[in-house]
Image 1 (cartoon, chains in turn yellow, cyan):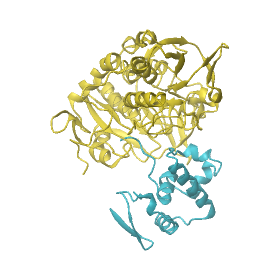
Image 2 (cartoon, one colour):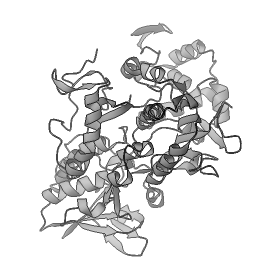
Image 3 (cartoon, helix red, strand yellow):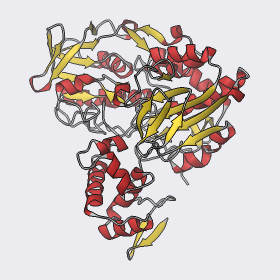
Image 4 (cartoon, chains in turn brown, yellow):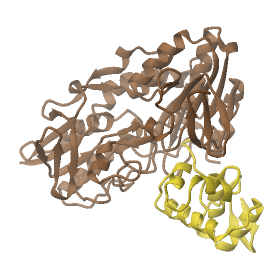
Length: 411
Length: 102
């Protein structure tokens, strides 16, 4: 009996378990999936939790409800991967040998990477919303916050869901407007990049959003430290920005397990072939989702498209064929802009987001790179799709794994 | 769009970044540096080499990463390429500036 082990039962790992239990011959293969947690969180929901749009029960379900019964779900903490000897060493002492390993351990925030970030103000005046705890603490803060300088800040790229900080800024504007407190709040968006938007077409199409919502912008800000006494963020050039409430996206890193196993780069992401999703160092190790170092967005939609490609390539690998399925970097994301509207973007490694109609060229009904109510309904409907379609490894109707160029305006 | 610099015609985007890395050469880098009021020294070249090697590996660049590269510390990076060091250094190195998905 051969063993395929999946590390991580998040979005990518769960999808792979669902794909592979249909594909692998049960007489020859046993599938294991290992995770130390019991809860599966709908991570896009963390954006809505601070604004009381979602409540905790909307975004938390049990991991085991989404793992097929023929797959062995193991709860436990992994000490390290010993890839040269093909086994996973658990903290409790037992070992799991594998024939094929899929790493789907995701990424996490690392506030400890920035001096002063997780000090005395952490989750008091400095918040993240990339964890359940952070998003919930921020919700409680916002409920009673009397106003002042709200600074929304990105530490460094790459981060999970690169549009989420912008969405947070737009939703914050709407939140305070709806509660008649907007005049008491200054919103500043601080980025290490050269703009809130960095791609030419997006900049042209969307630059109005910040002005319309009266959100100040500070660019090229590379944070060096946070002064907890003066409540300022300070960049390497000496520039300082004062805050009363800081919502930051800390440095994102892959799982520390990669460092312990000697498998990660300097941010603990696993070097991965960007088309085949095979590890660059070990032929029987594959990597999917946020855990890879490929130059695609770290997002659930990317993991979904990758899962279809990786399933094909695992079957090729088992059959000793060339890994012919090729990931094109496809991502497809709704972006909330507040007041019941959203944008939709669709892009890949080589094509930036452009305007057009999706998914049917010339028909839509969803407009790309343009605000619409329809896109907002799409974003809300996505939660149902996530739990009932995406995690089960079912293809989304009319949305192919490969990005389509038809129906888009590239010029 | 096209731009003529150091006796060569190169393709650049609206912000003056090369769109085809294979068109880059050292003379172009010298000329782009002068446009940004910088005279390249051996230290600048070490940074440019590092940025290009990361670009070839398709690894994302950040100021902190440059600080940890062992090539240069962040303070010196700001001294060599004042005012937005990463966007200036990437332009001179002929690679795209660090970007997000939109």
